[in-house]
Length: 402
Ligand SMILES: Cc1ncc(COP(=O)(O)O)c(C=O)c1O
Image (cartoon, rainbow, N blue to C red; front, top):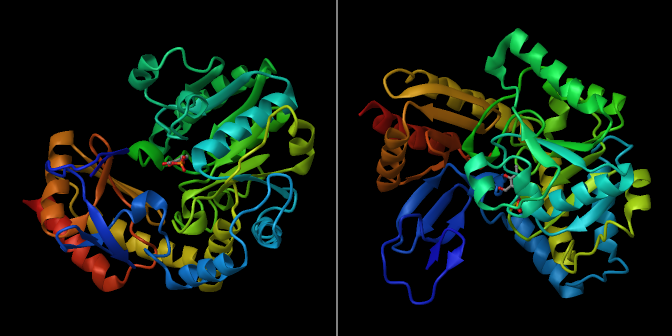
């Protein structure tokens, strides 16, 4: 039995979360064989649908050739993947660090930034999730959690995220305070998701121009900009990558989750080689399982499918449809429905109602997740059929109404 992140032996209790047994496309099944429409994608992982057959084939083919790379060398598929990924990013981002997961890649980017800039401070935004280890948690974990983990990594701290409701005056105030912080020229890097918060269930969209302003000011004061595309990357928000919403060139980008569609553990820090090279020795960039050839085969095929099918366009269209349908039910129980592409937050008036709707939807065969207390996050596989979207929405709306 698995309860959150803990796996038990011989568990005989009651499952609170869904005990997954198999999955295909936008459907998942529990241990009793009950079928669910999935509105989670495993939290932005299986963007192309669960167990994609073409990705499975690519893995099988690679397994016959070679499964493990060398720490001090490379396999041809690693180079092929690095070329493919960097060729769809701004040309200045010409190198990839080999990692296994989002947390690891975030932590590595922080080390690189400190070594490269010779500065200590790292700024994140409140209410964001960048990973489960100390430095990544220090960036944005809620104060209650941070407090219990003390001493947490010094000189890494969050500031308030300027979301779309703060208005022009609020954004102006943010810009002034942000510039004051950076002007001391002791901040090594700012870490942020590009256009909205996808982790911790906040579903908050940034004030328009946020990313461009952050880039302008970080550049002005010699601070590096690290963009976390773990949730927003690979078509989720209606663009292949979130940075495209404001056409910004960061110093480093983090990819994980949707990078291999969940078929293998892989992540990366993509950045400018002039920043990576001087940091190489001191930042200790070593990961035994980073970019195994199998993971690279999965990631390469995943990227090829996104490009071939222009999956981001599908995400934009279907996302708009879902938001519009749900917006009709704002009223008694729901405060707002907002999203970008297929990353959609349904904010309930209270946590209790949110939980009730979630549990009742489970019972009717819809798998939806709640990230923070009163926010339900709707993140279906981007390839979900119109029929399953409508069926899932009918279940959800029925429980919102009743
Ligand atoms: C935005 C974001 N960044 C980083 C991470 C950490 O990634 P991983 O779980 O692969 O360590 C997550 C995981 O949920 C995430 O949502």
